[in-house]
Image (cartoon, rainbow, N blue to C red):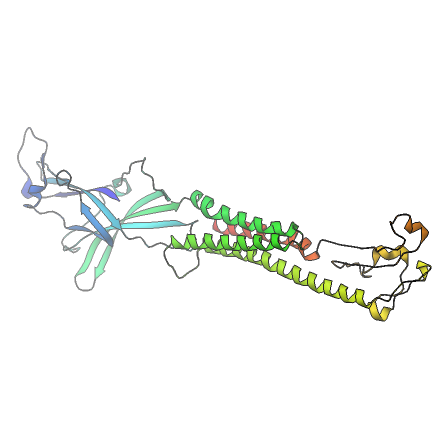
Length: 363
């Protein structure tokens, strides 16, 4: 930051009688010939006095010996930030000013007008932070080898702008999670459609997480944005695992149906469909009426299987009128797997609940 640092003190040795001049102003050449406070910025990484076109230093002396010493300084100071709530955080940074050589017994420092000693330009704004408030304090700093020193503090309360991170991080992550839910409405047999969709969303979430961490300092604790991104990544990853489970169960079901068809007894030659019987020891089902073939494979407890196939030989004249051939096959299908149906509700519901908890905690 760039600031005008103004010192006020009284040195009776510089007083002078005057009837016309209310003050006398000098440049940096006189500063080297009189006593001035040896102030420095504690914990500053870099600081310098501007020298364009000449040294930006002003010394103003009043007839009674009061002195105004003004500098135009640019300071790069350290600020200890707690990023556990990033990017929904509020930080407090301090600029500390202290005498280098003069202890509390030799030099006393204080703010001339308290908080009113600080004046800022209202047009000043930061790209990532909003300056909420600032205040001043004065404390003593102790050094074991030299003693006690007066130290002046300027405390800045900074609140981070969230809109940039909403556009660059939160919205893309949320859209990727919602995109992963599309696979729940795609037919489970459409492997070329569902697998690339899941892989694409997983890789995109990995790219978002990598991009956010690349611009952040390496800290050893979890940040708020990490929680949101990794939970979103878990939701996307679970949508891929969900399809793997659906595909596996569908394969197992088809294998069982294939074995069932191979073990069904031949029904050729049955004159009356009412006489058709299936050995319960082979299929697990008892006798079956042709009028109830639509419920073939439905358990008694109301549950239903994903795919059911009944192959029945039909010779009834009433049925042959509805079929092209006197002997056909009746296929009973339930295309939507139960896991997909539950996932359509559970995944969005769980993610909405997570967002409610997350934003209520960190907002």
